[in-house]
Amino acid sequence: MLRKNDWPADALEAVTACPWCGGSGATLRHAGLADVTFNTAPGRFDMYECATCGAGYLNPRPTRQSIGLAYARYYTHSAAAPPVPESTALARLRRRLANGYRNARYGADARPALAVGAALLKTLPAQLIVLDSYYRFLPRAHGHLLDFGCGNGGFLDIARGLGWRCTGMDFDPGAVDAARRQGHAVIHGGPEALNGIGETFDAVTVSHVLEHMHDPQALLSALFAVLKPGGGIYVETPNFGSICHRHFGRHWRGIEAPRHLAIPAAASLRHALTAAGFTAIILHQRPDVFAPIYKRSAALSEGQDSESPAALARPNPPRQQAREASQSSGMSEYLSVTAQKPSP
Image 1 (cartoon, one colour):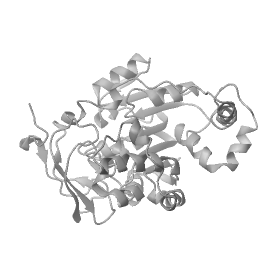
Image 2 (tube, one colour):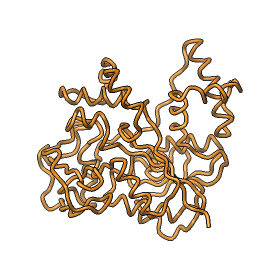
Image 3 (cartoon, helix red, strand yellow):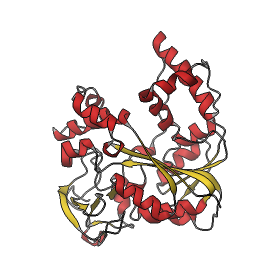
């Protein structure tokens, strides 16, 4: 049985260029990283920072044939958690207002709803971003959606509830089984499974997947190919240039070695999307994720479990850092991006 410090030497490969931009210059940023998040993957790994685009990437890294060792126990194997019941009058009012916005913006049929929520929430950007990111900024017009890296099918449930015809795809057989148990059409496979599909989808979402890929640029190009002209993509990844990474360093929750093979900065993701052919690239603010990532990172910095309820019960982060997180999308903990495939 493999010990914590043992990743098979013949199952590692050298990385000669940045997986995001192709740059060859890099400096060592974090040495000897271990899986301190789920404590399931063996080995210790070095992470370098690209001198060209600012991305972080493991070098050497697990091969495509061996990376499954890092997913022996992973959260996408479980079913999606049910919604938390609303217990107060204020929470119920917020739900009605949010439902009014959902119905007007996304074509949902959420009830009970207050129609005034559609206008009111537009004046509350902090609340609005939570709702829009939940729906991944989908267009109101429904069509055929692909969620690449669908995991247990949580977002497929959401999109199906809006009226989208949904297809999922994932390389993790446990996650595929969980999504299929929820009644979703899910393809088991990686980017190679996209070959020959053609321009099929009106929308593609790929959330917290690209950082797991050996070649994120190739995946974006493959997703571009299966989008209809005028179709849109939603991408979300951790941000190597985030405030919490700058503050906590190797203890930043977004590192998650060795599953996160290559973590982009804002310039990295914009370059890769442009190289794939996408236009109308918009980087969205995500101040809502700062506090939980800060708390989980603080727990890791003290040798504690970042995934426990106790981690999220920690004190709120300093106000100055929270303000910085709300003012610059390039320093957010997540890079949440929408882009389009040009029409003819």
